[in-house]
Image (tube, rainbow, N blue to C red):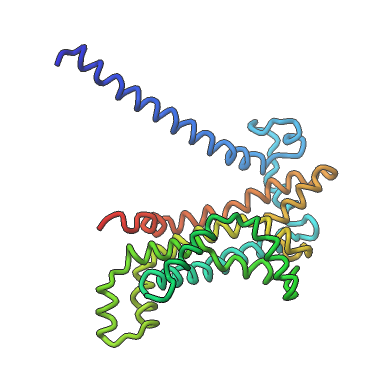
Length: 288
């Protein structure tokens, strides 16, 4: 093949690589710019924010904004943050265990109408959570749970998508031969699940936990419908109320931005600490 023909053959390949690099670069820029804006704006003075000089290297007041955040409205942000941690961490932990157990049961056991019931689970995955807010409110109202911790906590424990993932992880991680060997050794079903199956499904459990944690931490509409007591608000709803007040009281604007920055940190920390298990969980069943 001549040099001209070789260059002609390589040109589409190089053009394709360049296009991919440009698209990836634009995607990274689109993703990082809002995060960069949040980090810089959280440490700016009120005048700098209103003047639009976010990306300048002047007018920083990070520590003052941080003090204002935790002193605003008698330090209620600390209460909101603690509520979010309680809702998200405890809810994601229990919800992940429930989802994994249900998915394991759908995979390993035979019972009447199993596939039809699993079809209902898949149908529930496609239902937007906002559609369920009003029925959940009416149910909570009938049981006297409106404006309580339980009105927000109980609904997040059950996640149809987590059940679906639990079944997929059970198929990919737990061979039937291992269960048969455990039963032949005299282990009961509960003991087999807790000591054998659950350990093998550890990466899947972490993956479901991370999905649950992110969804609950960012949950906004359900608490807005259920709660009227500000002491029960999660941080997302609390920042929304402050942001609504910022139109009339500009002092809220800086604390909303600082609060938003701190609200991102638990999710970032969770993904950093658990990413090894998360990556393993996402590749479940891809290699046999």
